[in-house]
Image 1 (cartoon, rainbow, N blue to C red):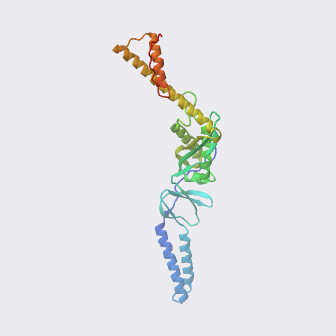
Image 2 (image 1 turned 90 degrees about the horizontal axis):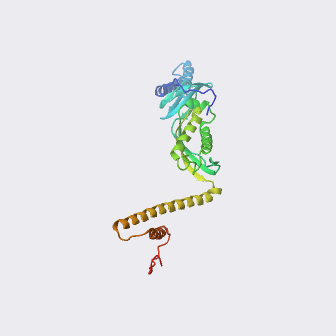
Image 3 (image 1 turned 45 degrees about the vertical axis):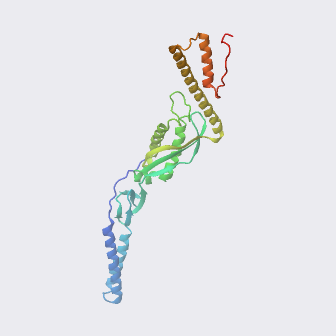
Length: 296
């Protein structure tokens, strides 16, 4: 996916620690209040009244430049709409009061998409949802290159899911073809790569993406369930027959090596038929006493 826009780039902002500025602003406000009181009481000349007002106002202005950051938070600094950099240092920070600020979380976020009804490679309607772990890596791109980066990620998750399902069958793909159900790890990696390519324009990094829900749509679920049950029965029958053939072969070899009984081809065929019936039948065999011979 190629996006042709002028991408912003995060750069460090020039800010300073807030503890000293907090103490300075408090000192100015206290000094200004004290000057006002003393000027009103007459202890100081009238000019001290103006000085007290200026000192208190200056202290209030300096307080307006204070802000705090927690770990994995960033503050974008702007001057009349012009991006001046990003501050990532946690703690109490200070910048000139006329600079505006926008805070953005750099923490890892986890989102589970809504269930989407889409068609797989074979055109079968399926329901699918994904769980995506993502985070902001570039605060400038996240804030200024897209309108709402969180909503942008959610939309791109849905778009990537629709695109991925169009390239894979739910199951029963062609020979050596990966499917959504049987190759979950491969599909998850392809989803992560495609989603990362879609959201990097917003300064977003996708750490992990996995399918959280995968099922046939309700209108075909019952038919597909019967198909799966039939295939399971056929696979079980095939395994039973293979085991029975092996047991019959071992029995004939054992009888021949021990010389218990000598069987011609016709008797071997009859014995094989009887053993296969006994071993492959769903019900228990009923013993029959044969008082005659095979040849009547």
